[in-house]
Length: 333
Ligand SMILES: Nc1nc2c(ncn2[C@@H]2O[C@H](COP(=O)(O)OP(=O)(O)OP(=O)(O)O)[C@@H](O)[C@H]2O)c(=O)[nH]1
Image 1: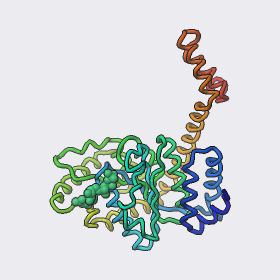
Image 2: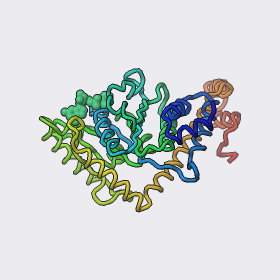
Image 3: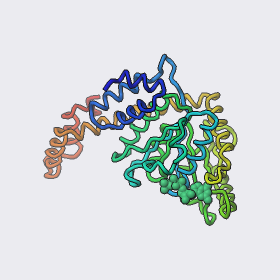
Image 4: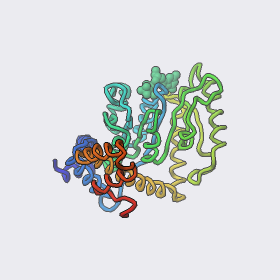
């Protein structure tokens, strides 16, 4: 594998090089991980200046219309001459052979658009692994000169938090609710959302969408004001991905928010905090990997038995284990 060649290809915008590089960062082989880390490092700040895309996290429960939305929204952006990458983060990998976007026919037009690049979720990994790989894939797309990187995740479990840690903006897609209930959207997700888009605001669903939008606007007003938000944010809006309405308005709000954050220092601060988060995550993943090594597993077994038989205590045994695998314990640190 020639890293320098891959690097040149990516910077030139060669899609095949980008695809191959993403495959490399998705690999869990130790030698691949090393090469991937080198590649991402090499691409960081080509010529001293890092290319920067607008990274938009997009979440929504199955059936809310994510694919339809991305098709309409992404198509609008490419029609404006922007280059758009779509990545998925799906730790459960339960659907369509292990990836949200595996079935590309769901984004038929966009997948054939020369200004768009669609990449399914890496399959068969736990959330920690998927998060890291996706973050590196985002960095590769940025280096390849995409203007917008959409990071899609299905609205279950913890994946929103992971996506929020790699996105500049977070958009939550909702469907019109039947009654006045707030669809059981967890408070934590409301708190990371910058823009809520109530989709399917068309036909018979229009008035329900309008009520849902008003409910969420009210709920968002009750949330604590965040320093990184200008007046009026976070906000709820209506769109119809099917009828392709509200897309321009949604894009305008996203850009307004991004511009404001750039102008007020929040953009850089957020990216810096995210870099710090991923550093911590790498350390945690590295320690977990050490625990999975055969010697560590054997020590775990041995010390576990000693604890079970009452020959030592859990705390003392844990210290002994950490010392054996060379991790810094509080005592030595
Ligand atoms: N009326 C209406 N239907 C929509 C709209 N957007 C999507 N749908 C329909 O909702 C269904 C689900 O849309 P998808 O785009 O596949 O939804 P998804 O969120 O990607 O679904 P998952 O793959 O299950 O996560 C399809 O039947 C769409 O045609 C919309 O704006 N209005």
